[in-house]
Length: 68
Image (tube, rainbow, N blue to C red; front, top):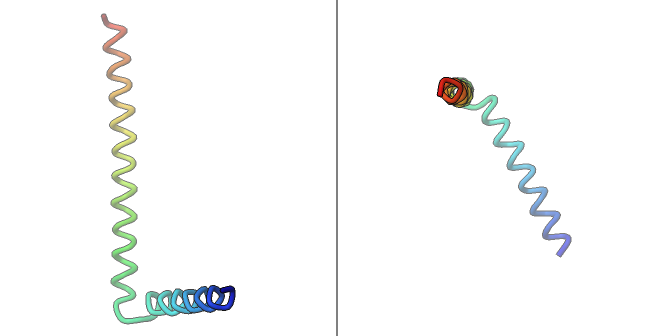
């Protein structure tokens, strides 16, 4: 059991290393990096807009309750 588990882990590790090498040096690696950066920027923008929206709603509700 342990031998097969160990062999499987080693193969998965080697595959991960090969995939990382291909992603960094292979064909389309610059496109992949640009796509990852764009996706990260979009995710940050969505999170930031969500935080601003929630803060705005909280402030609006607080001001609305003080006026009543």
